[in-house]
Length: 472
Image 1 (cartoon, rainbow, N blue to C red):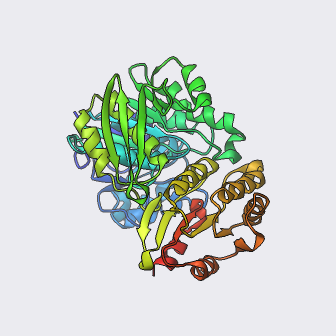
Image 2: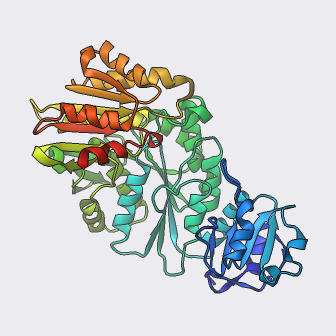
């Protein structure tokens, strides 16, 4: 029988999480689960997690005051005297576990197996969220589909997504993120996916993984950890990824542009700002896919999504229809039209060297001859000792576009500007700014009717503020 909120008791989850009920009524029904005491609703279970900035245990009593049916805490936290003489606390279930984060994953893994939904897991250095949305868009045409919201893709977010599974769900599409070795292995253990995909591997999270080989090994934990019955899709154009993934002897389906791939895109037709199309080839069959979103990177994202669909034996017409309806995601290479025929390419959600190269290639395909181009970049985070060199290379990549103006912001902005100048941009066109407002003013001063503006930066740079400043 499927685990169902409002029908499951605190007692039933004790075994999956190896927990002890040290207070309250274990037969209490639970209406849901929350890790945020500010959003807790009556009847829910409050799960206290320790973070870098906050410790959920500090808010456990507040959650009880707001009507939580129970709390899950680390061993040694609860003081039995808190429940004495306090009617409000008397029946509240208090469950202690050795580690609340680990226990949350254990509960999510158990919950996943109480339901019949098939699970898709997606990881990679770039394209995870876009691929997830494409996959969900196709599956939703014929299935009740659960997907993680936004980028809830870590050791907290993904388990919370799985705990939203209901008996009516046919599919669950999960994004898996990481910044250190072992995290993808743990997420794979929790989700036990039927199909897993690695979109690509690039220089990202180097502070925790040191070099590209470390990133590849960390992403390949999905291949290593997937069950023998699971199927895996990997970017076959990435030789290092394919070589590493092949070590684990799983059922691997490759996708990409190269002729050796199982799923290929051929006859790519670029419609500039209006999108792109290609012929999708698999096992001798060919389907024409028309994407509303521009950029070669979206061809790769669509290939990854289509490969997952083939692994799930999804209908071909659903693949074409679902991919054709995809309208993009805010902040991920989305095209916005401003006044005076000005086009803004908003790629501000995140950035690493791999995604920047893909985006620059796509901008190069978008720009019309003679059209003025303004590029604004924020620095790329978590690059460790490679940061300075990577940002100089970023400037050199921008220089290939021959922009009329290049504006850089962040601690490594000087390196970006210097790299651009060394690659041929006149020094007066490579500008370093310190604030979002200064970036907005600089770009506005350069804007002309019919120009194209491209903005990209890591999440912490919050370049969406620049987008807002240009749009208003």
